[in-house]
Image (cartoon, rainbow, N blue to C red; front, side, top):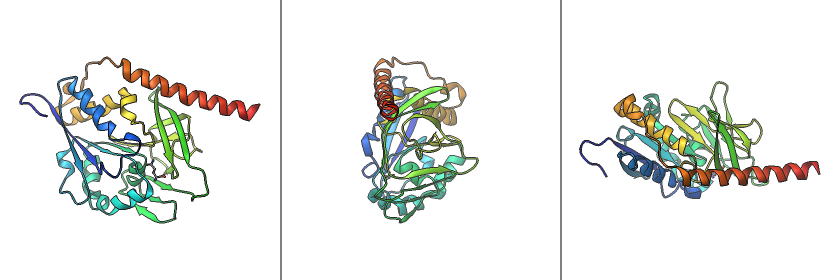
Length: 260
Ligand code: GLN
């Protein structure tokens, strides 16, 4: 909804019917609600395969995760939008790409059957699934982002490796993150954020949600509009604390088993 005189943001959700694992569409709801609570209007637009859409119409682009099959279905359409989305990110456009979406926003993802799906190269990263016999990375994640915890749930077979110079989003405290080996979680290029965290991630991590909103406001309306008044985050923070507790107690019992 938009009303005259109020700031308004356009949120685009890419492939909401296909890339929406573990409630990733909740990320759009979190942005909408946190904006509404501050008198900022939002319009949420789902962008499907073949839709006539350009990122010029967007202030925040969200893309979720999906199984390999769904990733394969969207791949050609995403390629067609690659140049437009790269330009959007170059122009400080805000992106949150989760799991399967994060993989396709890198250079490519090699699926569980070995087939390569070309990505759009926003993140300088490649992802590969080591094959159906290798365990998936599943569980609750805690990572440190700018000195604060971010929490979420991960379930991916693919492992992401960042090329030299590609900044990670966060450092893993508990869970697998990008590949279960280098302790890195996600990636960040300008205002584009990639992560393996489902959850949905934004409702449980209100600071991260506000970061995306304020980057988008800054880009469209200037720095003054980007100052967000605080909200009562008691419910979000309780969800955050519960996810933190679940992840850390799972880690403790795993460590206990290892050293018992
Ligand atoms: N299909 C991808 C993988 O298994 C992405 C999964 C996801 O989005 N949760 O790695």
